[in-house]
Image 1 (tube, one colour):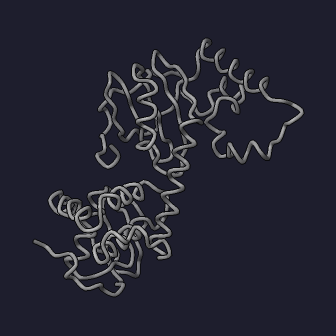
Image 2 (cartoon, one colour):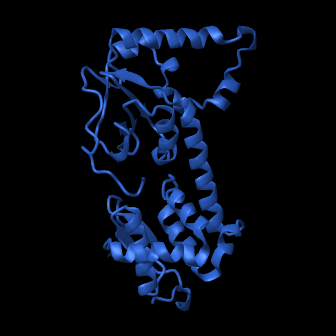
Image 3 (cartoon, one colour):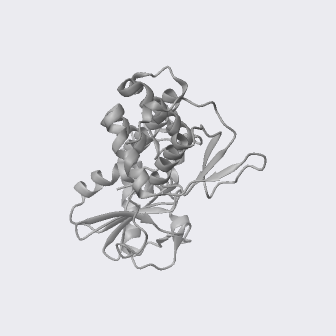
Amino acid sequence: MFDWRAVSAPESGVTVYVYDGSFNGLLCCLFESYAARELPADVLKDSAELPLLLPVKRIETRPDRAERVRRAIPKKMGYPALQFIRRAFLTCHPQKDLLILKFLRMGFRVGPSVMRRLTDDTVHALTAAVRHLDNEAHLFKGFIRFSETNGALTAVIEPKNIVLPLIAQHFCERYPGERFLIYDRTHGMALIHQDGAVSICGVEAYEQPAPDEKEQKFRELWRLFYRTIEIKERHNPRCRMSHMPKRYWNCMTEFLQETDEKSGLKTSAAGKGLPALGAGQPSSDFM
């Protein structure tokens, strides 16, 4: 059996690892780091722009190697560490891949105490990134606005982090009998729930259908409610933006102008509701 602790800590190398962008692929990068006794200068997805002056090593995603690493993590540093890196993988931190690899190497060396080393630059950076992810996911539980399209509920969001896996349970429990889709425009993926089944899969260039007359009336009623419930004497735009950051407004009904909706801004003229469950490629990284 491979002894993770028996391998001495290497110096930072000059090789750049390139992998397919999956969680299993990242675990294979860690396996290769131990097998080659090297610490890469960077870890990049194959869709990223590759450096010109550094040697590149392409890491093959092998399920058997990924599973060996996945089983070893809870044994060496505890199950919370595995949960932590899975969440870190969902963050928008630009260096998350290399940071996760460094975190795991440290964890195999020091054990469960790695989770408490908050003064370490690697642990601190990942902890801050995960906190940002959790905060954004929490906000989207209240900021998502659904529209009815041919008997299905649809919503579009533009998050910085990959939040769909963290909000899936909330909305599935809230709308257990509904067919709904939440499209993440930033990352090109969608949470689809229908007939009691749920999946997160890649969906390219989904556009919400333009609202019909009934939907338009409900949107206007919501905007009227939003304007009416405010206490005018206590109007405070700065406070509103602190609790409801402006970057979320683009996908919130109360801030969309009726003229924009009628002109089809960020919508398509016609639609068929939900794509069939399984029409995209479901990802085991997120479910």
